[in-house]
Image (tube, rainbow, N blue to C red):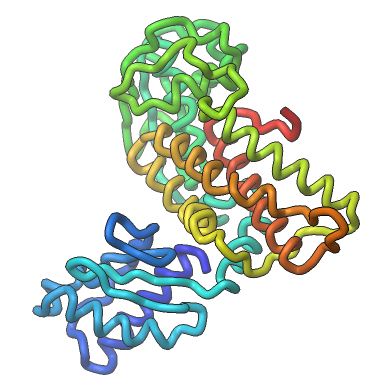
Length: 347
């Protein structure tokens, strides 16, 4: 079950409670679903009860208990728990992760993009002629387009040719004269020239820190070790590709199914569409970069258990773990592409 599906299920529970007279509220258009925060539990949490409490004229925990009773009827939920002031925490049954993996593999690198036919806004991004501002604006335009927006970048000055030829920053596109939104991109400038890092490491060095943070250049962005977040992200992606090749040599292929002890990975993969949408809405490519590090770190413990060991024969569990690993690699590759960074199959 994806966060979007879970959101619809929560809203259906609200609608049932209204129809049966237990709640007197207007059913909202959307229920926010995210991984549980501190003090939470399960796979996902929603604050829908806190959102409805005032209109319902009841304490948030009372509203949460009304909705919990209906959500427990959902066969795909192993448990629903109320925590804190009224958060609903949902634990999914093992088969739910299979549905998420199926969706990721079906959509490929476009998992997290807006669905076909989504009509977004026309956004004009303006930035100074400074290398970090140009790269951030370029990445933000890519993310906005993934959500259905029409985005174009205008540079207040003449950008250096190398920013496009080396770093891949396209600020030459021109869009409509009018725009629904105008966004000024002005992060803390780069303290040194990132061009010697090359395209991938250079872009990561400029995009990974928050806009108000000073980027580290040269930093350790070219070092192949676990302390380098970009290396971890690309290493995990390359490992998932290698696992697929090795599994094919052994005669088995990925097949989505329940995977034990992978709740953290399933949660962050399911959260990917929300992160991409939030990155576009809040104009924060660094948020997507940090999310990719979280995905890679959550996937790392899974990788050694994907292939059979010794004389062990490939089983349904191996096929399910391989499918989950492939889904993680797919999310990493898709996220890196939105940042304008390559995801090589070999490192």
